[in-house]
Length: 430
Ligand SMILES: [Zn+2]
Image 1: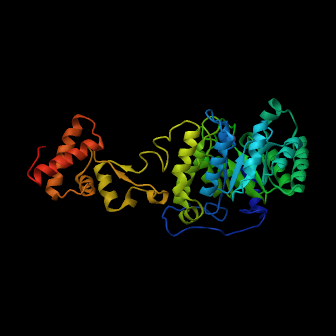
Image 2 (image 1 turned 60 degrees about the horizontal axis):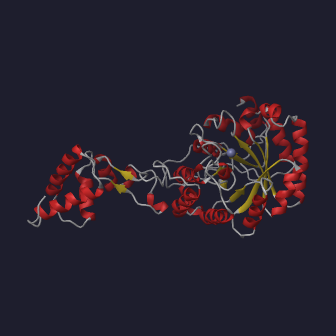
Image 3 (image 1 turned 90 degrees about the vertical axis):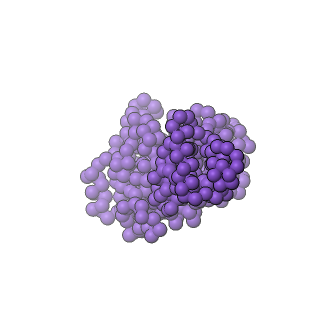
């Protein structure tokens, strides 16, 4: 975004990687267990990030979402059990029921800290405190675009109001995050001076979001530059929030962590405004590769599928076929050459181990591109005894039939059983 500011920040020696003002470097957090570690540097937080899970805030903005209290409680408990650090809820001033639901979830006694997301004014802040939340996420539009067309307020006014609200919340003993809604369209000098002021005022986190920048249009490079610059200006934690309109939300989250961000906003299956934000599951897929020890020790990955199914049912959608980890074909191997390698050593074509998520890989043999090694594996699974030559012969039969019509796994199993009966037992027909 601004190389001059970035360089200036480094020259001042004020770059930190959080948390809450402590200068901690060098930090690598690399695990020896994966060859796919981030390049990273002392700013990188890829091995010690926190998740602010916003299914119950951003997710309520999803086109299909209607969460009654019971559903919200179920989702909050599932998120807590999964191990997210924070659960963010819809503003209590959105509606009467929203206020009640905030109170209800605060009363559940979850391990995750409960946050709510409100506009940066005293009235909203007081309503938030009245619900019993652990923290309040303040948001204000700061771009000149919004200043002109939305609330028409000057930066000086924004800063004065922000400090008053922050002082109030600090006095109430709750955590405070201050965020601009549209960081990537804001004037950089305006944004940095505002964030420096709220940092000095004692917020726990500042947040940046690409909510309206060409509709989720920030690239990883832009994110890296902005977070890197901000890291040099504030000492508090940095939270980031990315929309997925251009398919960059996970990559942007990863780039933000590499640049020193500490907290990532997610929602289950990415549900949110338009096509949503960084999906929790896809983010876990990315991070379990980058920082396997951290992710596996902190999050209950085996609960991901049930969590996604819960939310998918609640908003009446299917889990997409190509969803990382839980898409129906995420661990399906089909081409003969892949299948052979996978059967010998899964890491050849699997960057993620399905067992980490309580799932199984599946080798598809019902196609013209299958190979005899894969068929042999299925033969073994079915408990049929065949020589390699026999397996090769039946593989040829499968390929012949698969050239003519699609085969279901049942079809292929029938072919294997019939062939076995004919060849091995000398009875039956094929
Ligand atoms: Zn958003």
